[in-house]
Structure formats: structure tokens, C-alpha cells
Image: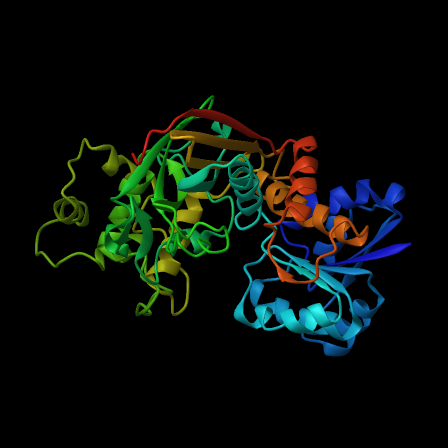
Length: 450
């Protein structure tokens, strides 16, 4: 029996665990699912005979080391900052490790030790990062193999609500960490390259500069720029590409509406608001508006944002109930961003019968034999329910498949890595297709930068 240790039983672990449970007989697997909450771990096992749930405090060094020593491979679905101690234990006990998180500097520092011990530390193998790397590299490698030269690469991804659950004016609900949505784009200007020229979008302009695109059967979307589109330029071998842009997808109209919060200052996470615990929603909104002896909060806000009462932007704000004097924030020492997250959660939390949706869209421009061509590659994944969500599926399944490929010695290259080699991405993308994560590609004459 081969023991797979899964650390963390959060929402992203459901599809990962089910996939490995379904393979447990043919692959001779036993899963140990460890979480700070024994209840969460037990729920994820779903009473499956191949799985054992245990409570684990990741800071309990003795317990952590004992269960890692017994494992044949370790999957860490913990928060990113907790991976490193697990990784160090994996070096000591010579265990391969898989995570969906970005490679941190501390993780990268273990590369030499991992190689010296012939260990595979596979990172960035979830959705984004993960499926984006693999699906992009597959097309980029195919273009190069037939003699083409890359001139444009654009990549977009979004966690959204499925059309059947799209029931509010914002066409959006929280399908993953709400805090990340509220803080999106902060911490520096967005940076990308367009037709050979570096471009920058400061945070206060980010949501007023968007791209638009169509996905057949699902309609129109918009994208705002990710903070650093050039992070993977060298990794992908695109140092000479003329256009490189990565963005986050939303339904058309979201960014313009979200920009209202940015301009008011409600997304700021850098200071604490006084008396936040007793503050009501109306007072919170009024905090960002100038004093006026007679004008109402509503009138002041419309004047500041330059929106009319019959504007859909106004309807979107009303839908969130931000002027309600009877709703209390109830958060101690909260920042504006934390309070905004609380307010949005009232309206944007998925209901029990809601379904989420992942959309990924790559554009590849290339030149071959004197001709310029473009490939559009699109993937849409709709969740089953609130346990097996599209997000859990697209984050968890690549992790599970990679772990099994490593366990079966199909992936053998050692070191701290991300999934950009054929050895990794070809079998994983192939398996994902059988599970409904499918990219559809269309080749057309090159359009250039829109």
C-alpha cells in the first residue's frame, strides 16, 4: 500500500481527494488527510475505505515529522507560507512533494538540496498558476517545433459564477478567497509589454483599462491587467516576444463598477478605521465623503462619482445595501478593505445551489514562413455543486494527477520546479481532458494587438 499524505482539507481539496480515492484500488493507494480541523478532514474522506482523517497542528514539529516520514509522497494544500517547513522535512526524509502555490524564494533555495537527494518538488500546479503554464507551454512548444516565431502571448483567467447562478447586477459572486478579490491589483503598477514597448498601469487606473473578448457559448468578458505580466517571460522563453499580457477575467461592466470602490478608497488595507465594530454600513460609506450640512450620503456619493440616479452603476451600489443604517460592520480594528469584504459577502456569497465557473483564454501570435497567424485557446469549466466546484476541480485535479505521475515514476526530473516541461504537461493535460477540463483551439490570421 502506497501512502499519500495530504496536508490541508480546505475547499480546494475535494476534487483532489476524490480523484485519488477513485484510483485507490487500481493504484494501491491509501490517503492520509491531515487538517487542523479533524471535522474538515473527516468530511473530505467521505467515509471512503482508502482514507484516514487525522487532526494536525502543522506547528507541532514532532507530529508533522512523524506523518511525513510515513508518507510515500506529500501533497501540501496548506496556505503558501506554511509549505516551507513541510518541504524541509521532505528533504530530511527524502519525500517528493507537490503544491499548487507559487515558488517562494525560500522554496527555490531548496532546489540544490532537492536535486542532491533526487527529489521532485513540484509547485505551481493548480489552476493559475498551473493549468495556465501547461496549456500555454504546450502551444508555444508546438509553434516552435514547426519553425514558428512567437510575437504575441496573452493569457487570461477568471473564477466566475456559472450563467445559471448569475443572479445579481454585478454578474459576480465570490468563488474563492474574497480578500484576494478586494485587494486585487494593489502593491505596484501593472506591467506588461505591447508591440515592443513596456507599459504600466497604476492601481488607481487599473480598472478603467480593460480588454474585451468573446467565449463561444458564454458571451463577452473583460480583463484587467495582472500586476506583473512579465514574471514568466524568461521561463516561457519569450524574451523576444513583442506583446506579453496577462489579465484577470470578469463579466463586462464589473471593472467600471469596481473602480467606484477604488476611487472612494474603500479597497485600502493600509489603516484601521476607528470604531469599526459599532459602525453601520451607511456610516462606513459616509466616511469617504465630504461633510455637507444638508446633502444626504446618497447625493454626496453620486456627486463625487459623477453618476446619475438612473445609471446602472447606481443600481449596483444600491444592490449591495451600502446605505443601510441598520446593518452593523461588527469587525474590531478593521481596515476599509476588510469592511468592504464584509459588505460584499452579504450579497456575493454563493448559495447552496449556486455553481461556479472557470474561464481561461490564451492568445498566441506567431510568424511562420513569412505569414503571421494567431491561435486562440479557450477553456470553460463549470462546477457540479458547492463541494466539487470548478475552482476545486481545476486547482485540485492537476495536483492529484502530478502526485500520481511522480509516485509512478512517470515524472522523474528532480528539483524545485513548475510544470513547463513535456514530461509534466503532456500526461497531465491529457488526463484533465478525460475529466472535462478541455481547451478548444482555433487558428486564424494574426489580428495584432487589440
